[in-house]
Picture (cartoon, rainbow, N blue to C red):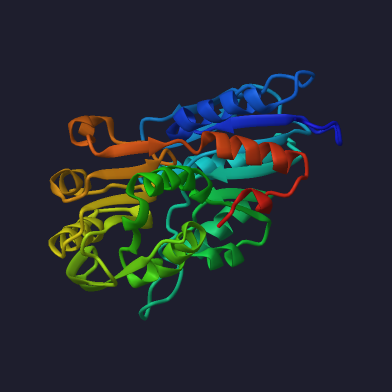
Length: 331
């Protein structure tokens, strides 16, 4: 319900790459609002493109005094990030009261530290650019590392796919009873998996991974009981799927009955679709923060898409009404 606690109207806009998601969010918001509240509509936003590759977003309606939610995931290409920045700038210059960047997938989040000499910290640079563009607050989902929130000089509303994934995991738990086991594909995912396991009271397997080089897995050794278990690998991102599929193949070779995966952001670059299609994975659950590639439809038989639209819609309404969101996420 939209409370009449202020006079700033709610305005929702979407850049081109996330319009599919924004339409579902607006539809969900209208189901949640009170009968006396006005309908939420996806506002008019045009993007003029020039022959040299430049583009210029512009609003086709007034945003003066409005609280603007601008939805755009910043997955490749980099045009998606640039379009978001230009749209935020346009909203501020059009006298909006507040601009909230809704970035379901926050790109460059894996560049969150200086892990070798003379490298950039992309996650911090993007945070700075959002600030300079005029962002007043950020809403995002499953950052690669929680501490990235400290890169921002404005409020961050951090959502989690756990709310949506737990419902499905509990169904799997009823199906497999005592054999369900959660797994982390590498040591970095141990904290995330332990949070799920604590809630579901299931055992955990940690896959110890060594890399030959970036995006190339050299060896994976599972730590924990695998034989006879129905294993679910939990991760935040699937990129090339090298780690995920190798972990699944190793777990099955060690005696696992079945292997599934849950991952929030389906980046799915390079040979990812082919690797998953040929792997030991029986199912791969992902969210719609990034759309699946329609040109790879024949390789998507194992994918199950879980929509985050209702979660984002509910949280956007809570933020608009100055209500807390932390109680909404059990993990």
